Image 1 (spheres, rainbow, N blue to C red):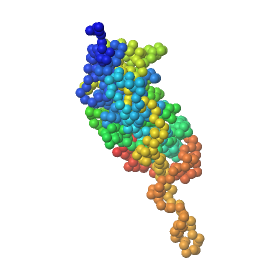
Image 2: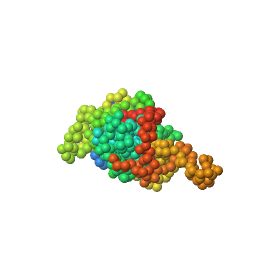
Image 3: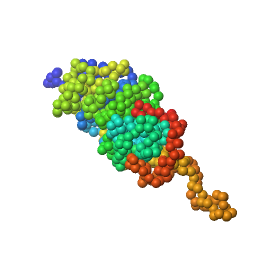
Image 4: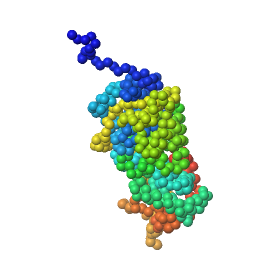
Length: 558
C-alpha cells in the first residue's frame, strides 16, 4: 500500500521557496523603463532566478566601472552589456585589447555551461550576433584604419604619448600654438619635426620669442622622442583621411546600434599610445556632440578597457582634462565605463563620478591588496545583507557585487549577482570571417588608403619658390625674349595648388638636429629666406585665426 505522503516520481519538483531577502534586494532593481539585464540575486548560497538585477537604460550615461582580478569575468560582462546596448539601439565603442571580443559578431553556441547559467539567471537565452565594425588604429591589425592629424590630436595628448614632463609639455603647446596661428596644419610627425627645427634655428627663433621662447635643449628632447615614435611605427597613426567621429554613432536599418570594436592585440606593447588614442576619440565626441540633457537612452556608450594605462604616469593637466570630460560628457548623452583590475587604478576624482558598479572578485594576497580591498568596500553603500569584504573575496567566475543608479538617481542595494551569459560567441571570431567583415565594410573605401596631401610646409615652398625660369634664347635670335611653348612630354607647369598632391618620399629630410644647418634642399632655402620670415610674421591666416582648442588641446571643428 502506498503511503499518502509518498511523492509521485512523475510529479514536478517543488519550486524552491522564495528567499525574502533576495526578493527585497530585487525590488530595488524593479524599474518602470527599459533596462539592461545583468543577472539574478545570489543569497543564502544560491542564485534566485526570479530576483532580477538590472541597470536602467537611461542611467547608462551616468558612467560605470567594471573591475576585478584577472580571470574573474570582466570581459564577458563587457560583452553582455555591449550586446544589450546594441539591441536597444545604442551605438557602442569598445577597446578589444586581447582580441577576445570579436565573437560579438557571431551568434553564441549552446552548451552545458550556458544551459546551467541560463537556468540560474532565469534567462530565455537564444544565440544572437551583434552588428560589429572592426577598427584598427593606424591600420595596425584587422580593421578599418583610424587616423588623426596632429593638428587635431593636439599637444596634451601627444605629450602623454611621448611621456613628456610638464616643461616639455608646455613647450610642445607653444609649438602647436605657433602652427595654429601661422596657418600651418600639422598633418603628420614629419610636419611637427620640421616646424620645431625651424623655430629653433637662428632664422626662426625670433618668431617664438614673443611667446616665451623654446629652449634648444627642450626642443632636442621632443625631436628625439618624435623620431623614436616614428621608428616604432607611430607615423601610421597620424595623417589623413582623419576619422570622422560621426561614424561611431551609426545604427543598422533595423535600429540596432553598431558596435565599433577597436582591435588592439598588435598594440599591446604600446599601451600609452593606444590608450591615449582612445582618449582622443572620446575627446572628439565631447567637442562635437551637442548638449542634450537626460535622455531615455544614451547616444553612445564607450567602454575603456585596461583603464589603468590611461592614468599611469599622466600629468596633472591630463588628469584634470579626463576628470572634466567625464563630468561634462554625460549631458551630451555619452556614457563611459572604465574596465580595470582594481577600482584604485582610477583616480578618486574620476571614480566618484562612476554611478554604476560591477565589481568582480578581488584577491587579498598581499598587504597592498588588503588595503585596496578595504578602500573598495568604502565606495559601496552599506549592506545589512552581505559582508561585502568577505563576499568580494569569495565571488566565483561570472559573479559580481553590483550597485547601480536607479531611475531617480539613487544607488540601488548591494546585490551579489550571478551574471547572465552573453548571447553572442564567447570566444574569438574566425580570422577569415573578420577580414571579410572589414573588406566588405562601407568605411573601408573611405579610410582604407592613406593620403599624404601637401601640408603647409610644402605649400609654402611652392608658393615662395615660384615657377622655374625659362632658359634664355640665344642673343639675336627671333625667339629672344619670347617664352617657348612646352614640348610634348615636358613636365606640367600647372600651379601646384591645382595639381594632384604628391606623396612625400620617406627619405626626404624634414628635420635636422637642433642648431645644425637644415640642408641644401629647396625647402631649406625657403625656410631661411627673408620672404618666409616676413610671411610667417603676418600669417594670421583665416585658418590660423579659426583654430580653437578644447579641453585636451584637441582641435575644435567648425
